[in-house]
Length: 296
View 1 (cartoon, one colour):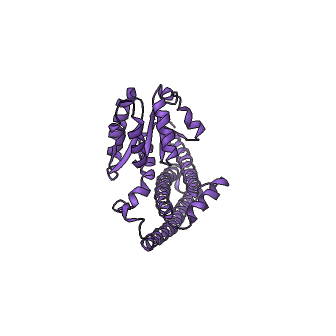
View 2: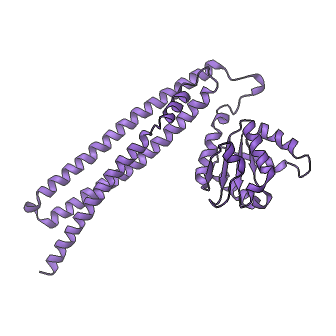
View 3: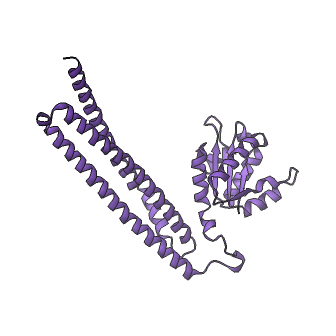
């Protein structure tokens, strides 16, 4: 069971309860409870609240219309940041001002999207989920076992990249073959007739559109899987002498590195739009030919 600290004003509690209910449905493999619910409503609330923040896995701040005026919420965010706890600050409307400390501490504001929030929370809980059965009172996990699992994840990530390149090559080859087939059909307009040629062109272009759409979905799936693997690798590196992949990613971010997933999605989208254009033109030609046959 994971322990999350939900920080919010009491007037926004119904909204927070709905959020927790949806998160529990979206994260069935990451069960959690809200430890903030046991904070007492008395003058000495900060002492137990700080103790809970120290032991929780992450803080989730839900911003309402007047949350920016709440001193307790401001204090909880600052303490969680001081304790280096993972933080997510979200608001159900972009019109709601964020707590003042968010700008000072450079905490990004996440807009209200429960599915996206569930994904971010899952990523925050990855390091904790890796050693779910480990008793930390016995010391850190065995270094040799961590190294073996780290090597396994790195090897798995490399094989995923290889499979991804193979899949991309197959899609490009299939789409190129369809374009060649469309060109062959178009060049045969005079032999097989405009109606037959335009119909054949439409069918081939529709198939190309379907392949392009499926390629884009496959790229997104591979990107998500690869991102998950790197999150696990990064979490394992927290228990190793050097954080190689994490340091590499920081350098790439500083140089505004653009993920190959974005490039591949754009390529798949370009092919989809190309085949869509061909399909629309061929459909227009076919309709024109049918109208001519009906109205000589």
